[in-house]
Length: 275
Ligand SMILES: *[C@@H]1O[C@H](CO)[C@@H](O)[C@H](O)[C@H]1NC(C)=O
Ligand SMILES: *[C@@H]1O[C@H](CO)[C@@H](O)[C@H](O)[C@H]1NC(C)=O
Ligand SMILES: *[C@@H]1O[C@H](CO)[C@@H](O)[C@H](O)[C@H]1NC(C)=O
Ligand SMILES: *[C@@H]1O[C@H](CO)[C@@H](O)[C@H](O)[C@H]1NC(C)=O
Image (tube, rainbow, N blue to C red; front, side):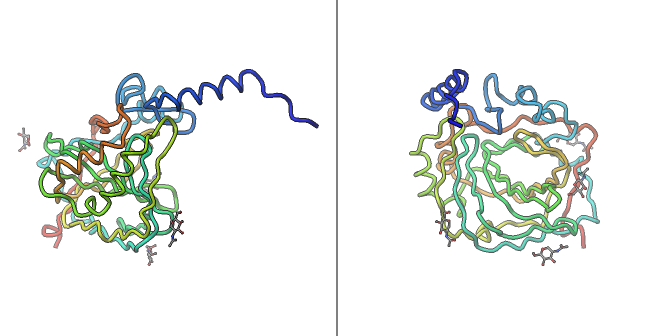
């Protein structure tokens, strides 16, 4: 049977898509819905953009939060965060709303309270999403891990302005290359990093804040185990600029506003206190 001629609605949809990508609209597709950090598709509207994003509006255990240090509770049952990462092929990705490093193969595990989570990707937000004692930092790195049952554990690292971060220095060339590639609607820009050694993410995990929250981008999935490291790292002004440069105009300030704790407790792991 010959293929039926393309219907008018299909052609109209195709045309709309072509026009949208030609104009480089600053919106991003997650399935059928799009979101940004400003304007009518900004964070206060995420929950209305798609039924799949309902948790963004109605979830009671959302992220990020303000961590009030004197309100945290030391929990001696928390364990050190144990990681076992190995070098793996990776890609630097600009999905329009953040810059990240995505692994194409098994890169290793993070052991959180006796449960294995596989390291999937890491990405930056600027300024930071989590606050400590009401202070917002210039940037935050999220190391995203997923268990075989689909649950997430994220390690968050805050940055203060100062010396350059050695890890970001290593990918400077690729970040600059990313800034030269336009990223239009529902497009991603990819730059191969080759074999990337996540052990370069030197992190001091002697102290961390633990709470249960959500992904900070749609669909805002809950029951994410957050581990915000107490050790703040340093990043240079130029590096913050290079993490923003490739992003769409509506997404250069890519933090979600603070969410209420709604009775949740933030726990503190402190190696010195736990011995
Ligand atoms: C905790 O810190 C906040 C602000 O940093 C302060 O207003 C409050 O009085 C402190 N509470 C206690 C119990 O120390
Ligand atoms: C790394 O990934 C790139 C792009 O997917 C691929 O071309 C290359 O062969 C991979 N390298 C290794 C060592 O797996
Ligand atoms: C976690 O993964 C590591 C490395 O794959 C493995 O050696 C270990 O046995 C796993 N632990 C648990 C509790 O599943
Ligand atoms: C929430 O996450 C924890 C830790 O990954 C997991 O053990 C638990 O089954 C999850 N609960 C739900 C309701 O998914």
